[in-house]
Length: 257
Ligand code: ADE
Image 1 (cartoon, rainbow, N blue to C red):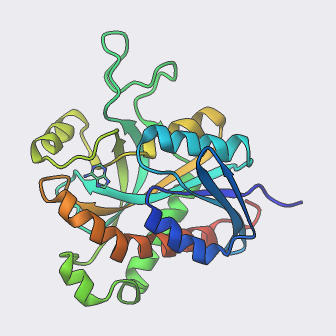
Image 2 (cartoon, rainbow, N blue to C red; image 1 turned 180 degrees about the vertical axis):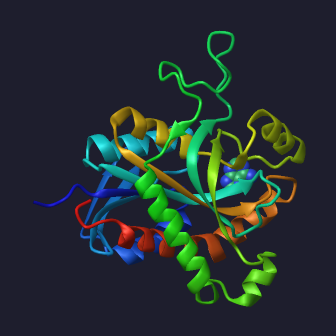
C-alpha cells in the first residue's frame, strides 16, 4: 500500500525553486493561489509548496496539504533571525517547540497561550525533527565546502556552522531591531530564533494530529543589519541548504513512514 505523501513547505520562493529541481514534479495542482507540486525525493512521495510569508499564509497552505492532499507529516524549511547570541549566520536551528511571540490574550489567558489548546509551546514530531537535526549535522560536517564555497562563507561571515535544537518563535513581523530581540530574550527564556511561519504550521499540524518539523537556517541577527544580509543570503546559501537538508532528512526517515 502506498504511504501518504510528506508535505514540504518553504517560506521563500528561492528555496522552493531549488527543491522543485530535486522533485521533478509529475503533477501540479493549483488552489488558493498556490501551486502544490507532486513528485518524489529520496524515494518518498512528496507534496511541495511555497507557503508565502506570514502565519496566515503558512497556516492556510499547511491546512490545504492536510485536508486536500492527505499529508501525514509536514517539514517546514526556511530562514530565521538569531535571538540566542551564540548563534551565527549559517547555523541551523531545528525547533524543539514553537511559540507565537505576538499572541497575547491577557487577561483571559497566559501571555503567548494558544486559545483553547491550553499550551504556550507547540510541540513538534520528535522523530521527524531528530531526522532533520541529524541530517543537518551530517550535511554541515561533510558537504559544507561543496554547498557554500569558502569565498561565500567569508562574504556572509559564516564560521563553522552548527546545529541547535530549541525554542523558535513566530510572529507576523520581520524583526530588525536589537531592542526587540532583547525583549524577546527576556520574555521567552531559552529562545533560539525568530521567524514568521513555524508556530502557525505547528499549530495546524497539532490540531490535525499531523507530525511537524521546522528547520531554519540563521540568515541574520534580527537587528538593524537584518534586511541587508537577508536576500543575498537566501539566494546564495539558504536555498542550497534547504534543498540538501530536506533531501537528507527524507533519506533518514524509516521506510514504513
Ligand atoms: N526570518 C529571517 N530573519 C527574520 C527576522 N529577522 N525576523 C523575522 N523573520 C525572519
